[in-house]
Image (cartoon, rainbow, N blue to C red; front, side, top):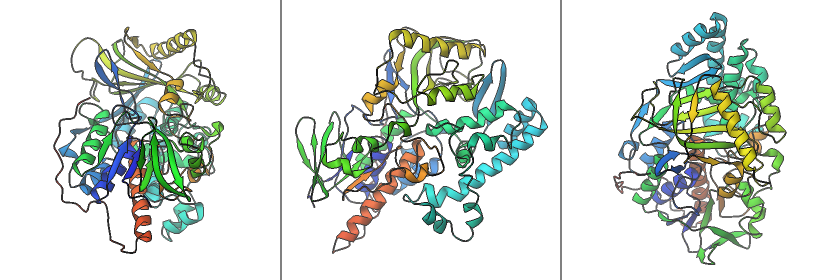
Length: 518
């Protein structure tokens, strides 16, 4: 085993969490990141000198992060200012609108006013089922190391056996939603949660209805934007001794006798490594992006298994004609046609559109006047390793997006400084993915079990990030970092004759208080 530090490749959420927890456990930790700032997909885009969230915009499950900060002798409040959102999102179908709220009774009332008492009752039953699925899988699956169907049943135990037999894995989400909602608009709304992990509601299992419970259980707004979370996690890691190197792209993971020995940067510099946590998409390992020796670490992922990518506009926009709130969704008239086009590798002709108005609160109140910071997302196929879109294709896609929101009365002027990130751009940022933003798609009953776990086929090499177990999304990426640390420390202890016990949180080092900037 090398005498070097534990090297974290990539400063995404999974890597940042791994670095902080390992450093808190007394390990020598070095993070190497190809970019200029922490965050990975949790990034800010500079638009005319203004930082706009260009990645995830919804913050849920804060208990996971509070536990991470606590393990490092800090609290989230030392680094971040959070505020719970009362309104989760505004949804539009042409001129029809429906808001969902943090208060389930308010959501139920809104659904009743929107679609009738029968649909409100269906929502109540659906909400209970989504909660049941989440509660059944939270500890044994989401917060546990990667498992298989048989071991999952063992983890759930006798009390959980009825839930194990009814995980809804063999029914598609879309079909299951039909049992709760007769109104196709509501089926469309709750089917959209499949896209939170880059999947189609027509192909993913109904188990993923649990995602709606995560959001219904609370959404928080982070003062200054979601990208501040990455800065806070970096500051947390530094406070317990982790070191960071930016503009340091890894060219190769050196393997000797089946075990990690070092990394080599693109400059040719060699850094010895006691162990490595790779916070890149596992597809990059299997494709040889980190050298031939490391290819055996993970299976190669077929492009057919990729999750969705996206066309993402970040802009200082002028928005009129529609009462935007922080999170607004504009649905297409034909959801089946939209996902059929994506499955065929094409952009939808009439896409659904998500818009995050980052200068607005959840009630729609605005900060400042004039133009406002927006991020706009349209789902796209993960074909970013193919030919880039032509200027004419980009213009057409932009016009289709504008047409979709205009049906609800929203008029958008994106301005001359708007930035469009395409699947090809995401492929450049996250190589060997085709621009897929969520790892492999969660299609079919076995997809979640096929996801890459913390351990790889190479000793001392671990994976973390939203493309690994337990799944996509900021909280899941954080859990993946925790699980990678758990596996790494357990493996080190089993290989050490001294068997010194080291666990995250075993430090009294006080966190550095910091003002986070974009």
